[in-house]
Image (cartoon, rainbow, N blue to C red):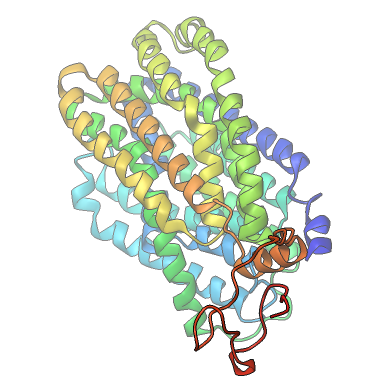
Length: 469
């Protein structure tokens, strides 16, 4: 076991975290450039709709598939990774989940008019294709993660964001404008990202030596995915419920301003996401005991890392946002600063979540995320109608803090070292306490005839030294 852990360390160690951090940084930079282009060309309204179009199709696919990407990474890193039934079972679940998600999106098109008033229904119907492409892309990326192919996962992370830009350029050259260009770019870029993700799996041998799909194994995967996805879904509610509430209760321009503030503040999450991305399969491979030792060692370091990033990002928010996005987005500075304060604890959240997922206890994360969601819902409804983007930032920051505190408490309980009673008994025999010194005058054992008569031989040997009668 020890040798196996040592062989995995180079694959899922510090170098993997640095590489994933670089990939996450490139992806965020690409999203920033894409958002900047949309904002400069078409203003805050189209930018707000673009932000929702990136989130809602992905959310639909992941929820309908019962958290398949999360479960795929866990099972491909765990004890069943060499089972020939596992990979075909995951592939069938991915195909079924993406198709069901697209059909659900089509059924909800009349309801989606509330969130996308500027997009025709036929364009919203086409967005159903992005449900398929986004789920398959994320699933392929999760499979790379679970198989310790961090280079492949990093490639997909960058590709799924970067490929929007050339697709957007082609849409503009074709004469499309406004949301039509955005929808076309999401369709084209999503198809290219799916080809990249599935192509990486094919290149690394994901389709070799398959067995038959297994219904019991599929049920096991879906059960774990549903348990884990409940926590991820609650986390997403903490991260994105404010978007939906701002979009429903405020003007699209307010949503565009808040989207800029939120995306800037989430730069804080880059180191945390990189740590979580690498530690999750590493903890799953190491087992609960070694993972518990690692999480106790890493937790204070991760918290210190994200807290140290707050001051420089505060200064950057004050000076960079108005210069980059223009005077119309000056109101994004204060919400961004508030969100940065709440995200200062994101390092602890990431490490604790990776540990609980990796040791097969994703339900505990749902408890912590549920506490954060309760804070989010109450404060969003109280603050957003009155304070707009600033109220949404305050609600989200409070939810981040509550979630981090509960997660740390649950992780410390789960990772508490348990005493091995058998091992303790052996140790106590090896380190036996010295015998008590014999007293010179000991009371004679009482026999049947009283204190002055010795006990019979049938009573057994005496534990002390006998004296002559």
